[in-house]
Amino acid sequence: MKIFWLFAHPDPRSLNGALKDEGLRALEAHGHEYRVSDLYAMKWNPVVDGTDYGHDPADRLHIGPSSERAYHHGHLTPDITAEQEKVTWADTVIIQFPLWWYGMPAILKGWFDRVFIKGFAFGHTDPETGRPLRYGDGRLTGKRAMVITTAGARAATLGPCGVNGDLNDLLFPLQHGTLWYTGMSVLPPLLIPSADRTTPTAYATAATRLRERLRTLPTTEPLAFRHQNTGDYDDNLLLHPHLTPTPPTGPSAHYTTPPPPHHP
Image 1 (cartoon, rainbow, N blue to C red):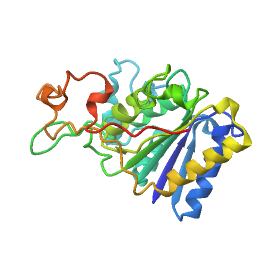
Image 2 (image 1 turned 120 degrees about the horizontal axis):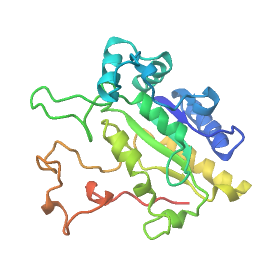
Image 3 (image 1 turned 180 degrees about the horizontal axis):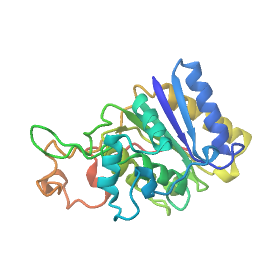
Image 4 (image 1 turned 90 degrees about the horizontal axis):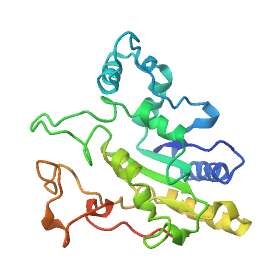
């Protein structure tokens, strides 16, 4: 497999840094190719700006059309183009980060803002129906993605009844609204909990879980998100009420079967 490892933690000596190195060794052992973007080490610029697209500052900046034109005409800045080439090359994308304030670090959000632009990651239509290709269909269809995240919280508190909310709900904007939106199949996330209290024994357990998830990357069943264009949604993109026994609300309505529980 060809794996693109997207990493966002400011300290290579951290738990995240150690797990990244552990993961890359495991990929080598299984004969996979990989490329890495260590965003902090790269000093990645997370801020969208007109200079990304060679935009004339005298004109108003419309992000969608401007980014799409720049993509199609080859006017994107080299740092964006290099990241898009990594995504295109890979058949699997791993996104690793610490869970900060219930989301990803700003530098990683900025990576998606600048790299997953219209024309590259979305903005395509079915030539026969004219319907937008998104939520299971799109330019990145056929690729797999998996989130690896650490959290200071205990695993149970990131479960269905935990005070922090269920992990898959917290990751819904990334897993469903970004990765699945662009057509990627999303594997269940790997949570490493109690990150600030990791002992040697806990690290050994985490490393074993990581190696096993990487070993089974090609065969793990993805999260069962609903496709936009296969009949589950009406013409207004509202879920048909007969698909759930009660009026559907929240992220859980957009799975055909519930995601598997995560384990410590």
